[in-house]
Length: 255
Ligand code: ADP
Ligand code: MG
Image 1 (cartoon, rainbow, N blue to C red):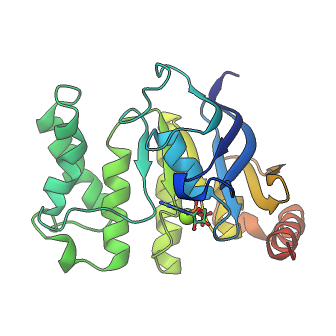
Image 2 (image 1 turned 180 degrees about the horizontal axis):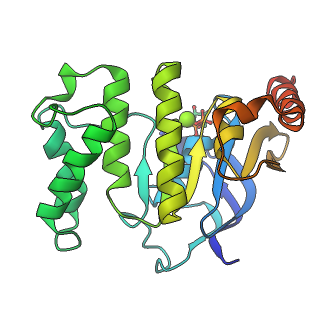
C-alpha cells in the first residue's frame, strides 16, 4: 500500500499565540484509499490539522506531503469540507455547488457537473432545492449541500470536518450508508473528524485519538476490527462494544 498523506513532525502555533502551539510534533501517515477518523476533545487541534492539510495554513515546523500534489501546492487540490459549511448566502444551492468548478476553470465539464449535482441532490433528499438559497434550508440540509459540493470537487483526498454533526439520527444513518457506498466505489482517501464514537467505528478503518499532552498532542491509533462492507448492526459486536468503551474512557479522561 502507498502512503497518500505523510505528516512528519508537524508543529503549528497561531502567530498571536506563539508560546502555546496548537499542534506539537504530530506525525501521521494515511494510506491510499484509507478511511481514517480523528476524534478528540474540543480544542485539541483537529480542525487546525485539516486547515494545514488543505493548505490554508502552513506548519510552523515539519512537513506535509500528499501524493501527486506538488510540495506546498495543496490549496485547491484537496477536497475540504470545513466545520462551518461556508455556503454563500447570495448564491443558490446549484450556484454554491458549482463554485469549486468556477474557481478551477477547465478541470470539470460544467454540463456533466450540473447533472451530477442534480443527481446528488436527489440522492441526499434535496430534489427541487436547486434554486433555493442557503437561508431557506435547515442546518442538516445545508450540511448535505456542503458535503455534496465537497464530494463533487473530485479531489483524491477528502477532508470532512464533522460533516454530519447537524443531522438527526435517521438522516445520519442514511448518509453513512451513502458515504460508504461512494467510498467503496471510488476508493478516495477520507479523513473524517467526528465527536460521535459510534460513527467513527462504523465508518473507519482506523481511528486516531488526539489528546492534549504536556509536549503537544499524543496520537493514539486504533484499527477497527470489522470487515467490509459495514452495516449499522455491527456496532453491537462484542469487540466493538469493548473498543467503544475504551475510546470513551480515553476521550473523557482527565487531562
Ligand atoms: P478542534 O477542531 O479540535 O475543536 P481547533 O483546531 O478548532 O480544535 O482549535 C485548536 C485550538 O486553536 C483552540 O484552542 C482554538 O481556540 C485555537 N484556534 C483555532 N483557530 C484559531 C485562530 N484562527 N486563531 C487563534 N487561535 C485559534
Ligand atoms: Mg473543530
